[in-house]
Length: 159
Image (cartoon, rainbow, N blue to C red; front, side, top):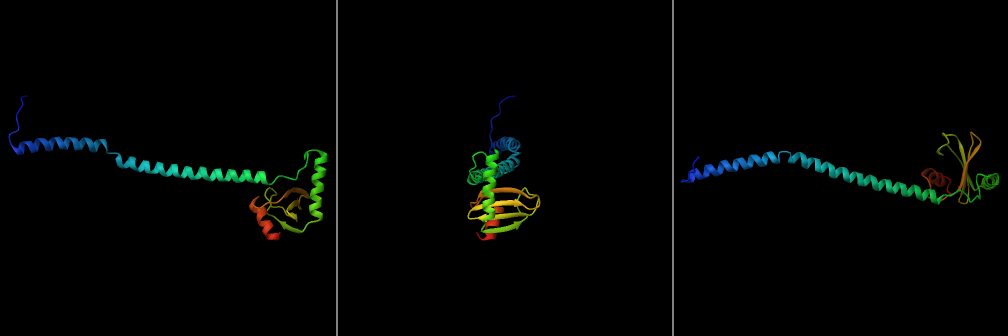
């Protein structure tokens, strides 16, 4: 194949046009999945944003659980599992019940299978007795935000 010089503008235009078409075809082939990749990148960014929101929400819930766990210690009983500790706890609970300022019957205490419970309030101290099983449930010093159930009971009693 021997070199043939381009002598006219039309020959030059044809040669350039053919070359440009080959380059454009190569670019179209190379970037054929561009829209698909752009869509996938958008979905990935959305998923990462949602993951961040979920992680933030989980951290907030974890912090709230931690606050609740630390803010509502049972009464300071030296050894609650010992007989003496149980007697001391029972004594505190009895004191709240005997001298209560307010009392409410409710089915809303979690873990009590919707049994009727009596909630006794004396100052900020709360004692809960399951009336159906005739067993004590808990006694603790109330602080707002402990749980929605106890917040609602507290507001209902008007303490």
